[in-house]
Image (cartoon, rainbow, N blue to C red; front, side):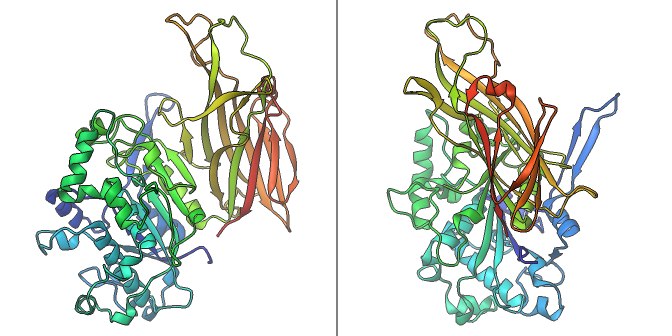
Length: 508
């Protein structure tokens, strides 16, 4: 029960009035959208996978209750005492922050600055608190898409929300709150899908368009420029905009998760896609889509649309484990010393420049990867090769591969282990002088293997087993919170001292 808190969904940016109207006409602001995909199968019939939607899956799998029709009035205002009066479990309630409603033609209010939306979020969270009966240790979970993540961060980082941007007493009364009711509501966790935490930057040569956007601020689009972001995020001039400075009621950075999209091709807004370019989800570049020092995952989905990141199995599985898992694992790779080159001729002009690490992480039983970093998607991990005392090594001793979460209670009947797997591929990349490359094959690799691992919680210790796909025998053992797995024999031929390091700790 400790992991469950009310979930508040905060949707992303609606630029045009038609997009505002479309948003207004979606009860769940898009959190109810799913996806149908086909894959090749045996014979002529394709294999279909249906992801119902985050809303449906949270209700079906985690017993969350939808607030519509029970706990909110016809204007989506949470009704004080409605959850407690119904004797419902306040921790498992699901709410939609419909902050674009006032800007619809039906209501006709002017567009606000982003911190105005954050102040409205503060009002909404207090309304939810009162609807739940203001229980002791009340807190919420914020789940946000795109600009919604910036609205959430403004609430979590900007003290002016409760000072200069505070709604008037008359406005609070109109929304069913007394002035004394308007106070910070604790946030337990924040999960963001495709949020431009470092703004929305355009491809090289289009910097002038960014300058015009930030100067004019058409339809609030200056919210994605550095100057305006520092203002509503309460950051200093020298701070990068993905810097997280939480206030007392905000979660620490380890409880903030960023889901990064890498599918540029399938984003449906062509103009934005052309302006931003590859190495993005079609709107937000990969390097701009995460909070500094926060855990993150990369999935091959676009910013929105039929193959969008919110309406994806991979997105939901990351969300579910981050919110409700009971064990966190952090995966690190130590390359060690490169003791031999790939077989074959090497041109004297070739120089090893960097290692490219591709990675897929999954949990047994899932129809998708939790985390995918690929050279084809421009998301692979690049580790510079350096010489130290005459030896070629990776610049970073321990390369962080992934931070993930397990539910150790969700295991197959008869198996005491929760199980996962990680594909790891390491390619060497050389600097070539001249036009002719006659000493290397495209796709050569130093390691290309999958590790299968299982974890079981015991009394004060973890039991584990693991096996590399290229090797018949596996290993097992116990550990408190740290495990070391040597690289498989095929990779150990190239890397002396290489190993996989896994850290585990309790999660709630």
